[in-house]
Length: 607
Ligand code: M6R
Image 1 (cartoon, helix red, strand yellow):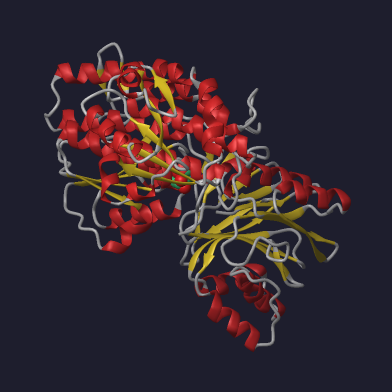
Image 2 (cartoon, helix red, strand yellow):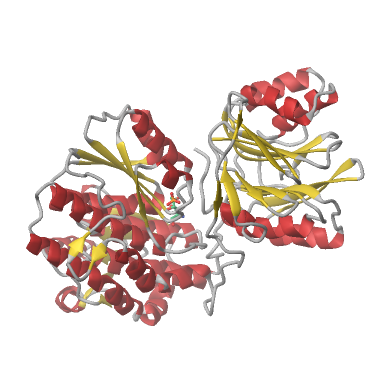
């Protein structure tokens, strides 16, 4: 959830560390800091808030040194203050950390009992002191770290700098990702390949429990039993250029607009248009023995999974369990032979989802991973990698990743149905044709951007907003509410439309806009009845439907949004667009930080 960069370099590193942090700001932006080893001492610069503040500090007080570590923080223990910003340092060592040291309290008590003074409220600082104690006792850096690592419970990626050894860094990973980058006469550590994109494409992924000593000459990697190991060096496809916003005001808007292209790009790997067949990137992966599917994900990815549950059950008639990843492991789930777990994740690094994947794997489940980052931990640990080709998603609010996930999941459901003998060739052709229509339909939906912008003010003034939908529109209602909450800070809830009368309808008055997602189709009349129950109680409705739906039920609404008429299979992709755009324009009207909303981070690598 935090970002780490480290360089053992041939020339001064502060600017390059700052550049690496810019690429990692999606991991957190509560505070940032850099430390270097300079003339036998450790120098630090830290600042609270976004990276721009650290850049200002560095401008006023430049940092020399050709070996250093850097960090961008998403606060877990201790507020987002400069004092809690990493690197944490003693006189001897400085250290950056991503993860949570769960046993930091007893370690802290132990350290203070030995007379050490800790300055921050973080869990991390104890590690700096534990390593420092060993170094002060005369141990070499590698020995000191090797002795301390077994004492740490929880999750960590660490990069550690030593005052007396300006020619090396020590890194370690357990539960949080860390990579080694190989340059020409320089070596790097980073949270991911993106952090190091401007420095090198030659990347080795550390495995769980690995720790590493890097020098300018290269890296010595050890496994959790302290045996020297080799980890393969791969060439990362991530380029050095920072992804730009193009002509758009925010990354989120750019990413919403990219959807027709990236969904088409994604579908290309899953549809054989000429043969009108669905396919998988690993065609010989046998789905016929799958008897049960478990879908696990978080946030927006979870809502994509919720839509997919309808498809798996409808097409393949395979029972589907669906869980938010943070709950999955802790409810003793029953996983029988013949089970397929599908994890869905934009980043492929979300700690809760990764923990669920590992738990299911240890219980003998086959693992399919629908991920957007093909080098991520989930991608590497899955049996069946199902990539979305959405390209880098920078805005914290997930948009294009969601519609690409839906495209992959629809194709997977059809593949499973065929493997189970539940799909006729005619049905398969029809699925392929409808999915192939999605990019154009997404374009059609984007054409309503201006009218959605024009109505945003009526939502921006609200304190609470409700979203309603039935069937696959119910997860979309939840997704709409999540989008609005996270970027506009307006309280919003999504409900199954038919569930309103069991309680939530008590919330209805003329101050609560109710957004009803109801494409015309088999569930339309039922949803409209629920909408009318809301209107009868003074509720102000914004109806999102197609032309027929708006004609039939739009009359007494506060506003209507007309979508292109589409087949129910692709409706969840198409109706994602208006809920994304509405949240976006409401946030802009409120003046919030759309791409980096408060308290959030793009990649959540702590449980
Ligand atoms: O990278 P992941 O898809 O695993 O992330 C899951 C959630 O953290 C993510 O979807 C989050 O809910 C988004 N900020 C929602 O817009």
